[in-house]
Length: 404
Image (cartoon, rainbow, N blue to C red; front, side, top):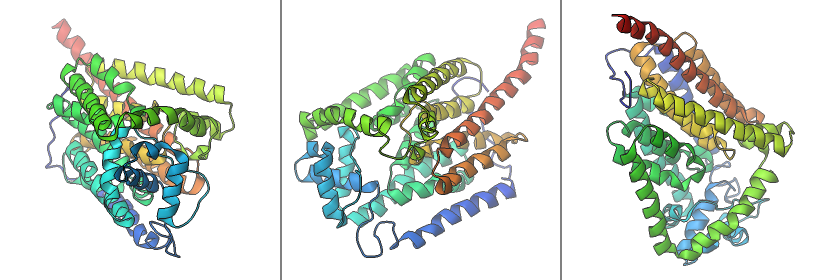
């Protein structure tokens, strides 16, 4: 199957029992951990004080919007005062708000709820489109189990992050592109709340001549910017632009968040005490390599599943600013691999490599190192080997047809 078309899937083949059992165990373990955390450091600590985690910047930004001061959400000092009041305690460092103003709409909606309700509710509600995207990609109910088994689920729910939303938008865009390019473009436009992923998607759409999706994404992005401008004022965009250099300085130069928390080649080199110059050189070299590979892949006759998986992986490899919760996007690539493997059979090396990738993600909880980068590379190798194998097997057929 070539071009922008998903391969047909026959769902009468049974999923290997070992795969079902393994995913079920992972899903159950992740779900079972939350009763242990609830009341013991998840939303609240033992003493009833709020636990300082990532979600506090979302809720406090929304609170400032509701109080009529959306631009103040970008001020680190004001943000922290609101956060301390909500949590009932101080904490070292900052949970700074750094998203573009359109994401303030979601923050304001969440801030209408009590903090604990909003925290738990965001984890549950944002998981729904992620589960739907994985079900559509895998094209069988097993996709739901695979989605819950992905090890980053625990991280997202624990800290109240938006990895589910990011994964669902990228997954939705990729699964819709062959048949619903305008809807796919809307998903991509909504992804503009994470601008660090905006480098490769437009490039691929241009290469693939997907002009309707490209136009839809552009219109959605511009519309979101204009609506947020009207809702929150020009000052919110000024504040966003003003504070971004400070945010970049803090996280990509000074390393205020431990380098082990970020899962990019840039962070890995800084974690290994390499110079900033070397880290940036390797990061931009990887960006160039990934971009060139995706241009070739999307212009090739490879089946669409590998193009989609490659783009999801490329989005992760291309950004230096990548925390573990956004490695949730890797589940989308795994979903496309599973779609083909369940329909036509996995190659001998694929499941062991995917298990190793899952193990590397889990290892982060114990090592605090950029193991997610290794997991992304492993999944990339699975896709590369599949493309190479199918390309090699197709070559003799094309030569025979040409001779005939």
